[in-house]
Length: 424
Image (cartoon, rainbow, N blue to C red; front, side):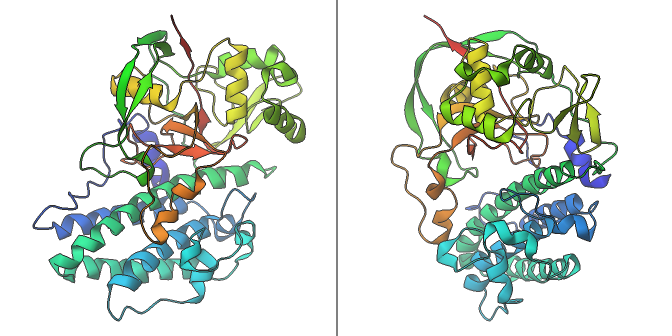
């Protein structure tokens, strides 16, 4: 299907590739046509990903952590209306003020909002009405980019740019959320019958990372989220880090050795999660009466391929596996150093990789002023950092310094791992 062709064709994209190259925000004169093209490309990609889904599919919210497809489509539209249009277009007509309560996510400064766990109860507006909302905002944004004075664009373009990357984040969530919903359906619905998980290209083995003090964090004029700065010096200890990702075959060894039944391998909270959730394998894995494993994918229920990287594992599982293997998870700084030096295979485009780094601010970090300051900073508690990108990540979204983050029990994203260990 066209909706997922980009997922199959760009699964091994490099971190510096771009699907929409927004020109330098500070460039003069502003290339208005390029910005309009970039805006349309991102907005169209969201609709391509939603296209295979029925209105009923777009309504479902399968758990508190997930959101309906329809909500993702509307929320990303609200973002542009809230932060770009209403403040920077004199006389702009809000499409429907009531939608700002329904489709605000967590921006307290932007006003009250529908509780996250109740997003699936929003049957109105319909999926078609959300399309009308998107079209209204799209026309207004394009008029702004075409007609605004150059001085206005100095303020507008940075907001537009973060809105584009924000929508790409929701494009990934749109896919992972509907996969979780389909996994709850005994019919194992198919999102894309032609979808296949990309083959890894790893050469195998491990490589040495030299110990040193290294500068970490965003550098240069390109886009970054605020949590990737300030750039700072960090101590990298000498270690050996695996070129490749942990595979399904390796994970099966962990299962067969009783990994999910051995409390000595698990963090205390991880063991509680194993018991409470009944984990016996990665997310979406099922074993039939003959003992054969399969997993829910975008192509429906599919046999486990031992050569593919394991995915849909939580931080707790990744940590337990590393302990079982007598290894470590790398820190996010070791990962960034190794990726910068080109030492990692399949760093991008297959699975996000857990690190053992807590999601904390870099030294000297300050959130940006206003409601957009709530984007990242207020979540720097009780979560762990993942690096890389996944098969569901939009092309052009990945960067070496990108810091993804999730709670340690969560595993509905395409999350996997690679291992490292310190050396003398």
